[in-house]
Length: 350
Ligand code: F6P
Image (cartoon, rainbow, N blue to C red):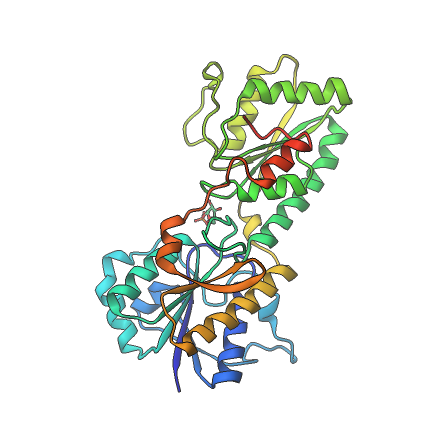
């Protein structure tokens, strides 16, 4: 009987437990393997801790909560001392007598786990998860769809209050150095402006856009979505006096106040970790099921150092080295969605 380890690494997101559930179900039903959860990613490996996972072991009155629970039952870490303890972690994998390891992580975690797997001769499979959607070579990553919906819902709510008070709502969203989350949710949530790290913008143009909304369309409020990773504006004349640590949402609100030629009442909402919480939506659950199944099948076929990925409507396996070479994946400035945003009259920069 094979001993299959599974861990979640990096920031949590909705859908991780659904992946764990899919892996346990398929490994048990189709192969009769033992699945061992490793708590807190490489920290758990280092400490040689395992949680045996069985089908239905978390059921409450026959209901399996894993499908709909946010977060991760295994716990996770964002910044561990993995690289400093590589030899010990490799030794732990051997000591635990694991036949293979499934790591559910974003681009950073996948790269580190792959390095460990390479040096320790582990049999490793990665499953991509990230609300930032910046893992390359896959059209889907666990957690992204639910996060887009959470932000879209927040934008809907902010629209009503903004319109009642004639305010400009500046909404800062996560995504690290990539603008996928801001772009997708901004379009879905009816934003008037979307600023992302990949596209330069000008505060003058942004303010002209707000003025046009007001003068041409009698729109006295606006929704401005700002990705947390945006760079300072091009217009050198409007650098506000702020500490560099100030959030980008506040930075944009201050710039608008400084440059606009009429008074604008701006409010800033930083959505923060709300974007990572919540119940996984159907698309993330479906992707979790498909990825979990494919990961187990790859192990059965003896195909390792691969990441399961969604490409052209199918689950495929891509070599992790290729994923690492192309990640983190940025928004292409001429992408379909950027063009769509512009066509709908959304200011997305130059
Ligand atoms: O990578 C996911 C993410 O949520 C980013 O969008 C965000 O910048 C970061 O993690 C926040 O990390 P932490 O939870 O450590 O504050």
